[in-house]
Length: 359
Image (cartoon, rainbow, N blue to C red; front, side, top):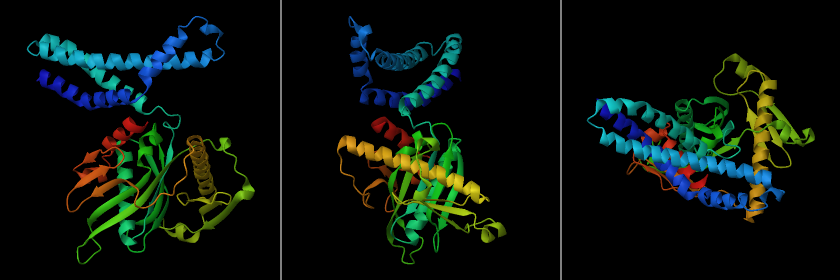
């Protein structure tokens, strides 16, 4: 029935409308627009030496404001019209293209609002490192690796496993993914931090409850020419790649490990058959990590904040499988009672709640 179909579309739009509204109310866009609008309309504004930058920002925020108001008003009007014409098939047929258009506009605008930082559109490197706890944490790290791989499949991102170090009994000690696609970093930057798992251990014969930790770091890809890397600061090691791959993997020292001596940053890649290709990818990773380090240090300097070491207890998200089922993000209080779905890559609710609060 057409009425139910259109109601369902509006129901599907509602979470995006809520995300847009929350973001707008939490942002300073409205206040900034009022300030800029007043400044632009002041007598003598054209003599302001910064008028070009001010005008650019004014136009940008004005367009955001107009799009925001248009979408919210359009959504409310369509809800009212749907109820007004619920028994008029001809009028409902006229509403259908308008409501479908609103669905596409809302999703596009939500991304425009939430992913508005310079790095958000970048490809990224995602690294996972197991915490203390041996097999338990290494198994947890492998579960996270699968979760992010499944998320990328859902969002049509391309994923390449650059490096993986297997655990002694199960799981992985560490892994690095190269993720490409529009807004890859923007979506995944919310995952940076410590992830905690509580469950009945499959490795404990007494079926006791265990807590495991793993660290996830996300780094945006950067243009290498924008980062100065001196060859004399690098220690480059080659080694035989591990894991599946047949005889070539076992016989050829194609894997590359690069240590940046001044900072102690270490990157490695073993995904390609060629040592040269692995070195090229490792240098991209190093450039990204150095850029991120510079950015972080500048932010700390500007905020005069003392740099703190990330401790295993400072988790960003908890995944509890026993004695109850719950995933909770400790930064946003976003929760899901279905950890199986989350671990299968259903992360968008957590990502959007983070972007609304912090972007």
